[in-house]
Structures are given as C-alpha cells and as structure tokens.
Image (cartoon, rainbow, N blue to C red; front, side, top):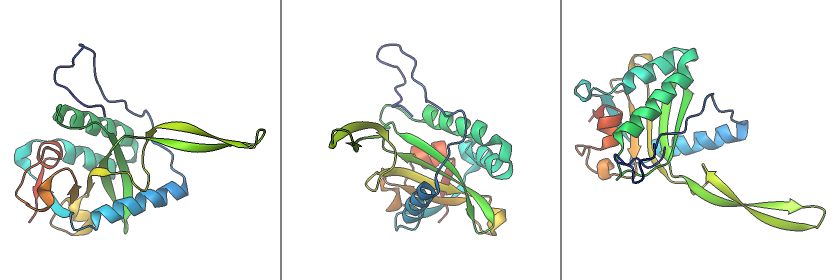
Length: 196
C-alpha cells in the first residue's frame, strides 16, 4: 500500500499494487510468519476486539467470506486492501499489507497485518572470481527486525465458542495502554471496538 494522499501532488493516480493470486510460501517461511504472528498476538499489547455495527465497515463480511469459502480469498483480499487504502490519509505511512488464512485448532482464522516496507542488502558469492558481491534488496518484507505496525486476527466467534471477534495489536498507537482510545485501523478500517 503506498502512502495515500487525498490530493496527489502531481495529479498522478496512486493506488495499491495487488497480487493476482495467492502467494506461495515455503515451510520455513510459514514457520517464520507463524512465530511473528504468535509473538505479536501473545504480547501485552494485544487485546480483544469485537465488531461494532455502528462503524459500517465491510471487513467483517469480507473476513467471514474468506474463512467460509475457499474460492474468494484473492477477491476479498483485494477488497480488504482497497478499503484500508481508502481509509488511510497522508498521515498514515505506506507499507505491505499481508492477509493470511490460518488454522487455529480445527477452525480457520484470518490474520491481517501491515508491515514496514524495507530496503536491505544481500550477500551473493561469485564462485568464478572467488569473491562476494552485495546486492540491494528492494521491498524486503519480513526480517527478524521488521516492525509489524498493526496486526489483527479475526475469527467467526461461533466457531470458537467465544464472545469476541478477534485480537488486535497496533504498535503505532497507544491504544494498548488505553482501551477506550480509537484508532483508524481498529474503528474505521476493521469496524471494531475494544471488547473489554
């Protein structure tokens, strides 16, 4: 997701770049993502959220469709990304939006998180010259030091026999310290409020 200015400086059209198909993920990367997600959602900054019907956000419908129907993942992911882009303004940084369909116990959940977009360096070996080259890596997505800006795990609460709809961590807001504080990500985008 690029930084979203309501009025672009040079009249150019700014819009999200969306994947046309599900991304493939090697087993090692699955483990890496799982570790990052679990670590964030188990932290003291995580808290329970529930959908707030007064917010009029379509996210609960999109997530429900993703969890219930295997054939709509890409389509609904695009709708989620576009809706977040619409809700952001020039104050919100750009980044990479990741949507993952996960399994928790025997039921599915949907994890939505926003990452900082990074640039890194990669060491490559040239065997002919017996030397090493350093190449720039654009759009480095997730490393041990990558900052997860926002993460939400959303469920169909009836599948888990719980009273809340998910968990949220927003590292860019003091919302973890004050459950009554509103944020655009929780309220405007997800259409949620703090459960407790």
